Image (cartoon, rainbow, N blue to C red; front, side, top):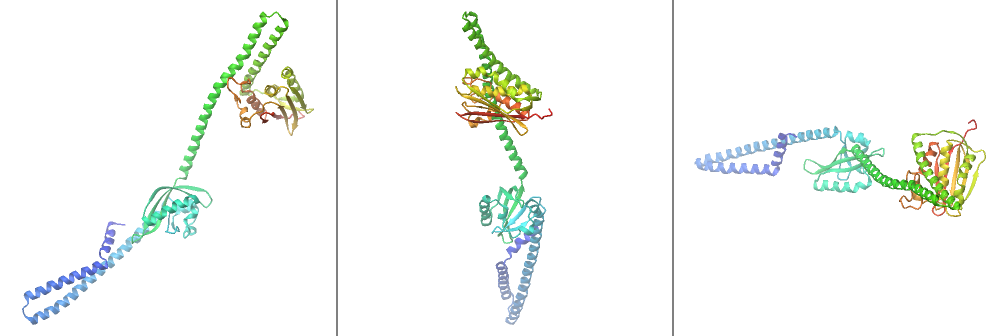
Length: 456
C-alpha cells in the first residue's frame, strides 16, 4: 500500500464522529462569541442590532451546514480511498502468495484452512477445493499437532510470529515433505488477527541429503572402527603366524640336535618322529598361506572327481593323528558320487575341516564324515564331538585371520586362515559352507560343490 493511501487511512481515524462533533461545536462557539462581541461593539441602534443578530443566525446556519457537508464529504472520500487501497493491497498479497514457488496456506482460529496456493496443490497433491474448509490436522503427523497448536494459540492471542519451525507434512500419497515454516498473524482492517499464515520452504531434499551424509558419516565411523579392529587383529596375527612358523622349526631343531648325541636307537626314532611331526605341522601352515595366494590369483582346474576316492585318500593321512588322540572316525559316503571340482582344492578343504575336528575334539571322541548328493550339488559334512563354537562367533570364524582366541598365548595353534580359505574355495566352486555348533557338544561343518554331469 502506498504512503499516500496510508495517510488517508490515518486521517480517517482522526475524523471520528466524536472529533467531528468537537470541531462543529468549537467553530459554532467561536462564531457566536466573536459575532456577539463585534455587534455590541460597533452597532448602537437596537433595531439594527436585532436585524444583525437575525442575519448572524442565518449565517451561522449556512456556515455550519457547509462545514458539516465538507466534513462528511471528506470522510466519504477517505473511506472510499481506504477501501480501494485495502482491496488493492489484498489483491497484491493474494497474487504474491498465489504465484510463490513456496507452499503457503492460512488457517483460522479453529484450524480450518482459509487459503491454499498453487505450490501447495503441487507439493501436497490436494486441490484448493478439497482443503478449503478442512482442518489443517490432515497435513500433520499426530506427534507434531500439539506443538503446532500451541504456536497457533499464541499467534491468535498474542499476535506472535514464529520462524524456522521444522514441520513434517504428509502428502496425499503418504510421503513426507520436510518444511521450514514461518507462522505469522494476518490482520484485518481493525487490527484483529483473522488468520495464521504458514509460509513454508520445502527442505525435503536437503533433509534427505543431510540424512545420507549422516549415514555416510556413521558408515565411515564403523569402517574406522573396523580398520582399528583389523589393525589390532593384524598385530595379533603377525605374532600368531610368527609363533606358528617358529615353533615347529624350534621343535624340529631341538629334536635333531638330541638325535645327534643319542645312542639309543629307540629314543633316536622317537626324536626323529617328533621332528617329522613338527615339520608336517609347519608344512600345513605354509600350505594354507600358499592356497590363499592361489585363490587370490584365481588358479582353479575343474575336473570330474570321484568323491569316495578323494575322501578315502585324505582320511588315510589322518590315521596316525587319530590313533595318537584316541579318536574314532566314521565315514558314510554315497556310492557313485562324483563332483565337478578342483581335486587339490577340495582335498585342502577336507584336510582343514578334519584337522579342526581332531584338534578341537575331546580324548576318546569321534569324527564323522558324510557325503551325499543333494539336487545338483554334492554335500560333504564333517562332524565332531569337540568343544563347540559359541553362537555369536559362528559367522566370524570364516573371516580371514579370525580366531576365537587370537592371543599369542592361546591354547590351540593355527593362523586363523584355515576356515576363511575353506569358505573361499567352496564359494569359488559355486557352493556354500555352513556350520552348526553348540558349546560343549561339538560342531558340524558342511560344504557343497556342483555334482558332475554324466556326460563329463
